[in-house]
Image 1: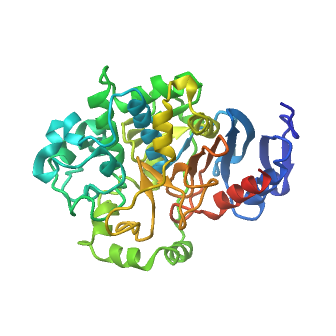
Image 2: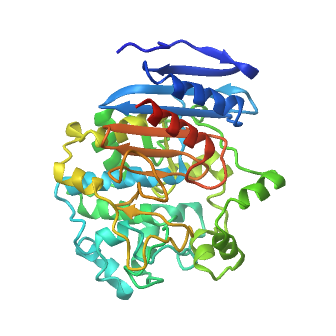
Length: 410
């Protein structure tokens, strides 16, 4: 393949380092990536796109750490928060493809302890669509960071009573869906591997793509980005105005479903914690994934193209491509307080959140603006991540500018 920029480096206004390439025809993507730094306040970021398992965009730039002016390198690893959930769901889809699990079977068939407190009829499909009523945190006894590990949190979730009638509506299981997926993999995998081992051995290693759910001890901290949250009061107030009004009201009421599902009294999921080893090292597939952005795009690109190297069955790919089926009360998410389409652990393209060419697309955003997805219509894998967080999750302006530019080039 001939690249328009080869591996050339260029320095842009403000002397911010930008590296990488775009294939011919994708020059507009590079332009928007540069504008993220010059016009939209980007500190450090990477953006990668694979089409039919070939890279067409691989850009990185800025600073891994603003204070030390340490540059974002070709092998820099970045934390992607809730985008981790999508990688956990990809692992479960591979388990489905191999016949380990049936999406329409009851969860307790594989995990008998899950049948406690009226959960015996919940199906895997309902669970993955955030319909199981297990989103709240106040009864989970999370006293230490280690309590977020699957080995601890799964026991608490198995004993929980659902907070709503299963299938009535859905609400984002922000802290818990990753653990539920991880426990299903461990229960159904013939080798009973943890999610982090299953993912590494069955997806990351075969694809030579670096992504971790539970950071290995031998990975140097010097490769990992320093996350910046929104700390300035004025910026915080401006960001809050972008939240749905019902969500804002929910945060003000400690007994609301919003607060009970999202508010972390111990502040374990505060941005700064993700700059340190304890929370990155455990298996917390709801939010502690770390990896190279090109590796993330390569993984989603493999699934978008059928993942033959992984042995993905066409029936499973068709399941992933299907549009979401809403619960009884429709697409309104009672935790995020907006309409969202969920299916098999992913966000899906639909009228209120469009990504990819059609409802065949599937993926997951992360707090602050990261986003990874597959577009099977184009055989496309997409990944963007940054270390300066925006407010909220979906359609962060820097990410959206890149996504719009990409699809205008196709």
